Amino acid sequence: MHIKINLENIQTLTDFKRNAKDYVEQIKATKSPLVLTVNGKAEIVVHEAQAFQQMIDELQRLEEELQKLKLEALRSTN
Picture 1: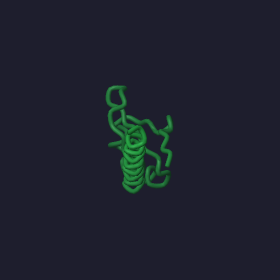
Picture 2: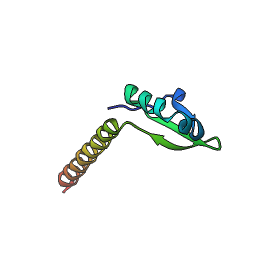
Picture 3: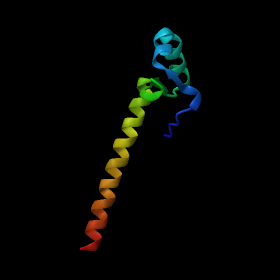
């Protein structure tokens, strides 16, 4: 799974508050995260829940795989 933040998906927190329903629909449709800025700085990422869970699951799977590879490497050096 590859998630990339589209530079067009950067909005101000103020605009998000004003148009939250539209932005939520956009996020759900595109499965792409939205970056919200406060005073011109990226502060918050809003992500569709299922896509976020998939990202977390993939990270956990990769961490487990990395741990296995580390153990195999340690065993092979002994």
